[in-house]
Length: 171
Image (cartoon, rainbow, N blue to C red; front, side, top):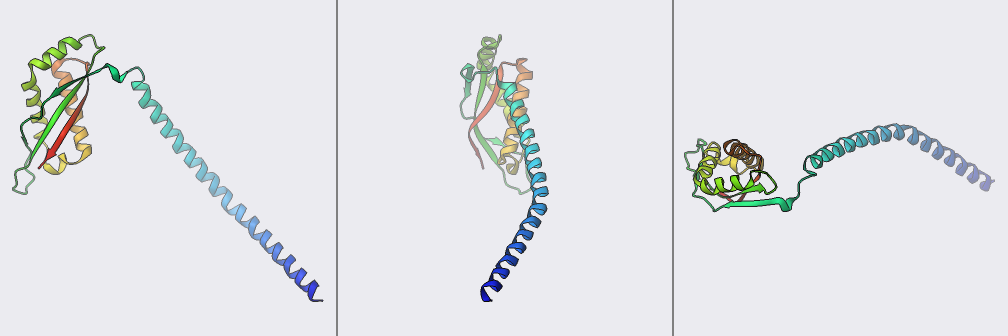
């Protein structure tokens, strides 16, 4: 009699376990499908963004860059931040030129002859920012973008590919 009672108890537990498994499947499968669709949509957007970034630069070879390096300049006074302290930034600047551009030789010569103009443009752009701003990487990238646009406009060229700072020290 005990054997039959234990068998019935095990059978009842198996049926309860089966019922809970069915409940779990019907509870979690819809939410997992929604999550999977969301992840798929996010991956599609990221793939789209990555392909658009590479599409713009797909025809450019880095070996076609010619660096035009300006030595580390004198310190630039930063805008007042209200603390009463004078803050400065010191940097080195590299202007990357596209050697395949039609006006590469002309722009390279103009840059060599106009280094003081480039320093002045850089000083005017960086001098607008406060110490707290120039230590932020996103603001440094904004400064690079402003300087790049300003140089392209001043020298009337697309030969200037990018701007790089080195030895960036803000105090």
